[in-house]
Length: 204
Image: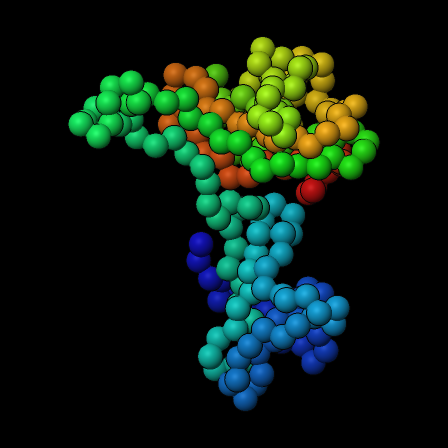
């Protein structure tokens, strides 16, 4: 992440949504001022990028730092541990995965997307739906999960029954597992659960 001083945004006389009211006074007193609706500005997802604004001490402009959308940090597989007195052999090889907090599906159909890179036939993700008590949901777990093998900012997740989660009237969790012969190649930046179909859209 690097600042882009050549594309600094000049401070307007009137606040506009493009800079989300992130202002720096010409007197040199820098700060980020609340939006009219009371929200705190500072960052925005625009198209394929996440952008944050900040002011320089001498004032006059608001600079932007940018990176690929939602890719400021990521999950990855830790290097394989070696057996020690504190880490016995039985605990060296673990199945890398994470499980989300509970998610409430407020009716309708939902889809799951992943923001990841390094995916291939040798390094892929398996996405499953669990209930609140961590039990696999039939049709959305186990052998019904279709491997995600393509990298992208919002790759759709699918199961043998399709890409849509529906007819679930209880809280769920999302479990994501690293699979394949080279899971260490994979970086997972974000997982999204949405009522919208993002396919073909410029951005979510």
